[in-house]
Amino acid sequence: MSSSIPRSEIIGMPMIGFGTWQIPKESAESLVATAIKVCYNHIDCASLYENEAEIGKVFSKVPNRKDLYIVSKLRSTDHFTHRVAPACQTTLENLKLDYLDVYLIHNPFRFSEQNEPLYCKKEWVLETWREMVKLKETGKAKHIGVSNFTTTKLQWLLDEGENPENNQVELHPYLPQKKLMSFC
Image 1 (cartoon, rainbow, N blue to C red):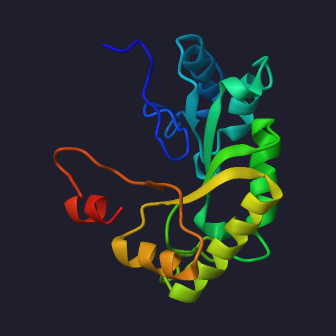
Image 2 (cartoon, one colour; image 1 turned 180 degrees about the horizontal axis):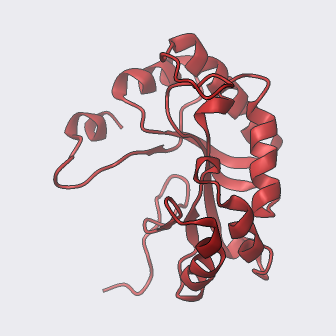
């Protein structure tokens, strides 16, 4: 048995990561510090979780940034062309990082700037995706991808020309998502 955690062959992502969803702000710093101490180097974050600033305190103390593999996600209220880059910059500042290993569109739908849900429209998804591609080109994200996308919405991106390098989804014996896994 190997003593190392396998990595995704495509983007070098450790297959096991420490998720920060539902970690309260007051616990985030100590829990992430402990996770890193026990050898988690893949930390999954999102601006929606509202604990990135506390997590960033831990990242700022890690001697070598390359020892970490950091994923974060663009929240649905930032799916507007004028908000994608600033949202990523805020995430980087909160996490005390110069770049993200992976930056994902958290969901394929958009919320209004007043936090009201809007229907998913292909043109909105593609507008947001084009802005994500720009982030990769600037080096703010080494890899870009999506989260919670169906095969239909993934096909929209494939037709656009720049393939997502990751589709983070819920997957387990009670939700095998066979069609989606086959498509990916």
